[in-house]
Amino acid sequence: MAIDLYTAATPNGWKVTVMVEELREAGVDLPEVKLHTVSLGGDQFTPEFMAICPNQKIPAMVHDGRAIMESCAILQYLGETFPTELFPLGERRWDVIPWLYWQAANIGPIFGNKLSYTRYINDATDEQKAHPLERFGKEAQRLLAVLDNQLAKHDYLCGETFTVADIATWCWVRSWKWAKIDITGRPRVMEWVRRCRARPGVERGISFGVPKDEIDKFSQERRAQYRQGGAGIASNWALRDDAT
Image (cartoon, rainbow, N blue to C red; front, side, top):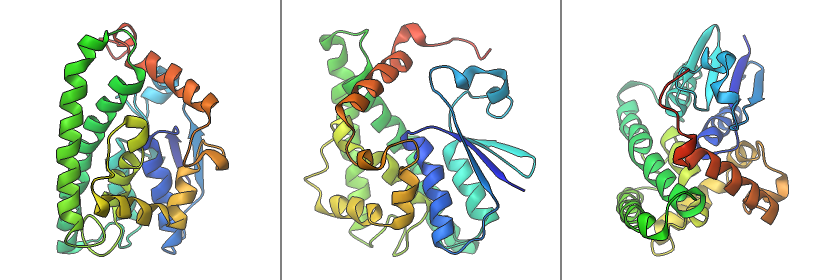
């Protein structure tokens, strides 16, 4: 049965498209994968999307009659359903699962908040933004130190093989320039970013929703588009206090 992916060109969205392409690289004969672009200008609040993802966030997936939300849960589902070294089974999975959760609970929220205050939030003064920018910037550096310590032991986050933990973490860390989180003082992290980027499956995965010549560097027009869209999502006036 086909896999329906509902996603957008964001770090969380790219996680699942990279996973699909990495599974193909690993030789998995996947069923048909149907990609559905979700406009973050409001598609996520439609009844049709909420029937798949009650949390009103991308990505979401439907496979074999089951709807799954949350990017890391989708990575785990795909990893367990189509077993490869991307999500090892048996005891080895416990080398990977904690780091997958680490990304979901730490790298994503911290990098995302730093990005929002750096690029998107317009309804706060510079003085109001100073504290969160410092806090999220410092915590981002602490998390990069954690990543750096892992990479001192082996080439990838959980060992010598590329896994879902690398996919999830890399999709956020790769945007360090856009979020203005400096990683240049950590050569191992820089090399890991390049090592992951060099994978053909990764390149195809991050091509979703972006022209080929903008995979690694957005045009001025796209930067402006992202700023405008991000500002609409990040501003307090746009926040909802219900789920209807």
